[in-house]
Length: 268
View 1: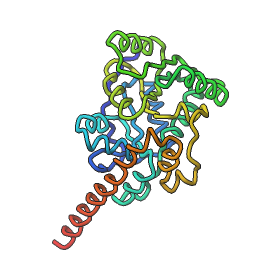
View 2: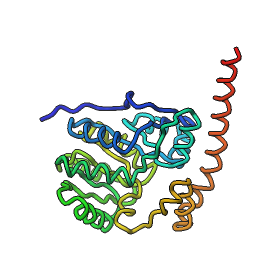
View 3: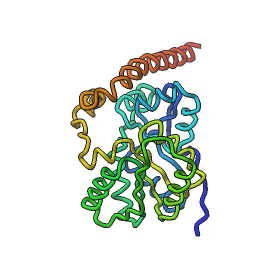
View 4: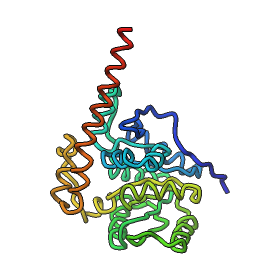
């Protein structure tokens, strides 16, 4: 048996703090390579795909900010974060979108014989997503599929699911129970699971066709949120109208103070 190690953060990634949360500079290739490397070594780690929603949740809750900043890897999931990195001087910043990273990781896992597990969604969405993966990557090994109830788990239920994941042999666990719930769950279970957990949000529903993704053009110009708001207005309107304007204000202030400090140092 390979002895596991707990990985709280990764220092080899270039990163910046955006409104208080760490965002790493990475790529699909680099992130996938790291995740597979950790999985094979039975490293206990979790990966966050950060967008404006996640960073503003962290800004409003210091405990959640700790969860995000303790991740092994925090990818810039949304284009506003890529632009923010660029504004802070990271010219090579690129988007690493959670649902697309999911496919890169699944492809590499299938090629390298690394079993994966699925946690989240509904039984129907997991079945559809598993079918999609098996068609796209015929050699993929899906060790477990767990659809927990949409409520707080009892200690007995949590123990049962954790044991099932542990006994399945999965080395990568895709966790799709929504932000901030999935990040908190991964952080709480890091000590209990010798695998890499990847927070994938709505990736199960996106790739199984249950929820339509925004066109690539809208994604590239940072308007994916508008498309998703149009598709699910009742569920998402409060999130976007609460977080998006405040993010612009807070980051503008961060950039301005950073710029003024740099200008002062140059003139000193």
